View (cartoon, rainbow, N blue to C red):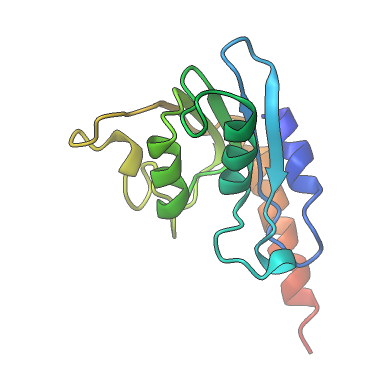
Length: 147
């Protein structure tokens, strides 16, 4: 999670500071990314999606990530939860819960739906206070910048 926090801090000034890191089965880092939605003008440029794309290019059979773990600072949204499941990631670890858009237990639980053929192991709330603080600080600064 500390690597994901470092990635989150590298987000551009307009992007929500969320970071994601993919580790191979031996714990070696394959990829890391921060949100780039605003920087790239791309609604799919979430940290998880970017990290999964990079990891898939380096590992596995081109898109599957068997045995891999994804660490992300905030509970994934529906799009990211779906991508995590489709990539066959074995474990998902996240920091802060996201009650408004979280799709790993808060609003929905996409990754543990029993109808899916692959369901990663999930652990939420890891370094939650640190991960949450990044988000709170980002949005507080944005509110302070309003005229």
